[in-house]
Amino acid sequence: MKIDILGVQAFVAIADFGGFQKAADTLHVTQTAVTQRLRNLEAFLGVVLVERTTRTIALTSIGKDFLPQARRLLQELSSTLTEIRETGKAQRGDISIASVPTAGIQFLPEIIREYSARFPGNRVKILDHASARVAEAVLSREAEFGINLSGSTHPDLISVPVVQDEFVLLCRDDHALARRRALTWAQIQPYPLIFSGDVNGNRALLDSYLGDKSMNLSLQFQYEVQRSSTAIGLVAAGVAAAIVPNLAIQKRTYPRLRIIKLKEPTISRQLALITRKAGHLSPAARALYDMIKPV
Image 1 (cartoon, helix red, strand yellow):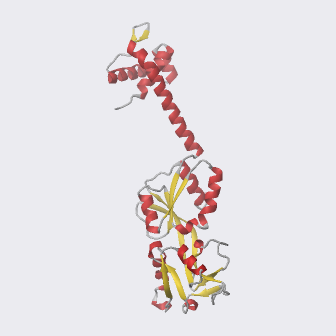
Image 2 (cartoon, rainbow, N blue to C red):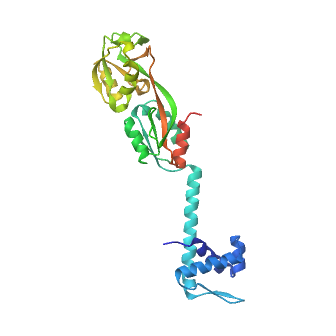
Image 3 (cartoon, rainbow, N blue to C red):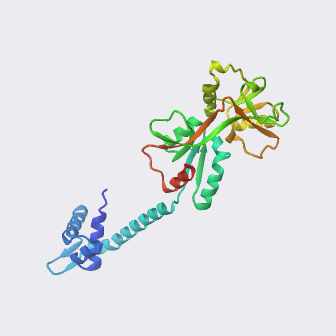
């Protein structure tokens, strides 16, 4: 059903101000426009709301019954629109974002803490997914935006780089390599390694660098896990050393762990903000997005 707000507004103004011209002045339109709006409303309802002569106007019995309802309708509409407008201006609301898990260890927490301090009433839902699922969540509108690995992007998504994340060697303080500050990839070949596999997108990235025959590398990936957090737990238990993104390591959680830079080559991945090309972020989500996005 089409709701004729302009007609209802004209009807209430005529009733409140006792005439078409005063109603027109109040609504900042012409008298002709007010007359037409009332006629359209009466035609739509199939009843006469206002009886008019050349000198006077009066509400019909139906018009008198309808007037309080019409006022309430306009007031509720006005209150709702004001609330939406103020919510937008105040950047209030609940938001959902998707993120690769490693972004939630070092990179994202401080930003979320600052966001919560600025907007304490806003609820934030973080969907920590593998890389492919982050893109799916944004495309399906399950999340307003995502933090994902840069790379091949869906044609309906926009990607904005935010932070570089180097791969490092992680070992326990009793490991043979624990005293080294930096190592080449060739120097870690003799040692069993833990590696997080295809689900998080790291394998394809490392293979693109290390799979070159000219590198002549043969790394001992003796253990494969699905998430970097599992690899870190195995390292802490003394199982082996692991190759993980630096952002995946929660500082001071495992005092015995040592982080060693890997070089020749230095391999890093890039995290990026992703949004739908045709999407529009809510004011609350836009505020968080802008805090994450580099200036």
